[in-house]
View 1 (cartoon, each protein chain N blue to C red):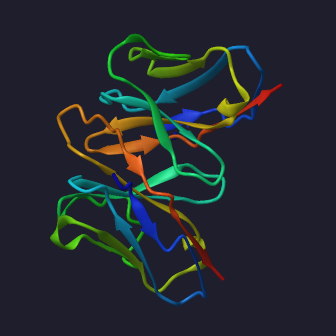
View 2 (view 1 turned 120 degrees about the vertical axis):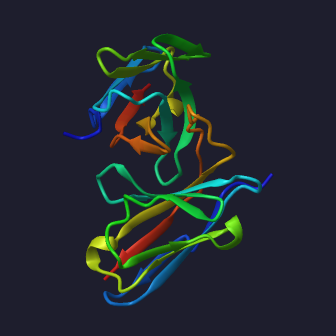
View 3 (view 1 turned 180 degrees about the vertical axis):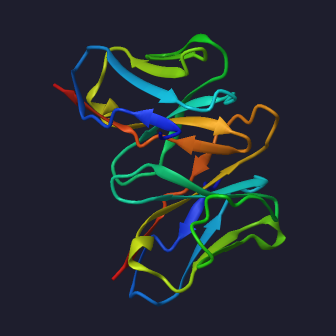
Length: 109
Length: 117
């Protein structure tokens, strides 16, 4: 079992709709959870971090964490073509950050 | 403020040769990480430095890989001798601090693409 699992996609969402990205993790002691965005040929950049159960909103982005279910999600409202990228879920374990393989998101006009 | 810089951006070498990748973290960042992404796979952790000390090198694949961070500033990752399966993109990332919670706000370099023929 992978430590961090994501559906590889591609996930195709019409412009203006809500994109929902999901992630599960295996290590119950993980404390910190992140979503990174990676455009093709570029490096990952942090877009959201979440540490407590529940929702955290930042602009069009909402991260959701459920530690009991070991589940993290990212919602993107009013999806824009510029949101087309690979989204990486990442989980802390001790001092290291473990990444999932990423979900490729495509926003169609 | 300069970001994380990596050199070279792309290296093509033959099996058996040696390659050294360099990473300059953001100034003042004590934590420096090396990751590798092989085509189609996840970004895999290689190792973590805190200043000049190796905090965790559990992800290093084998003894052909040697990482150093002399003086706690820039870091090098040497692969010697390189094998075909070493091909991939090697990312370096840094972060300014490490607390119990570890914010994980890693700042990534653009990566060094290694192709072993």
